[in-house]
Image (cartoon, rainbow, N blue to C red):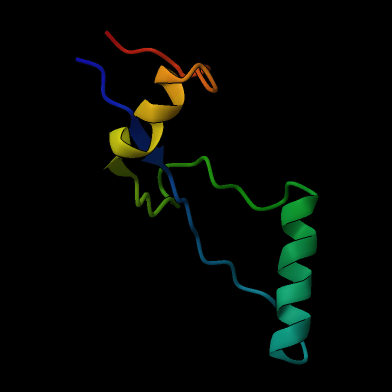
Length: 75
């Protein structure tokens, strides 16, 4: 029997930012993130909230009707 399991990964870290106020600090953090200056791959800094959800009821009708079939397959 086939099941369709959603895998959701959330990574987070906390960065220390010098700024005049919270809004400026968030803007600096966003800029640093967009410039790849914030690392979310180092296991020392990751709070990994990975979750697994059974989405079979949602996707099975779609697959059976031929509308979607592009899933990674795990046997």
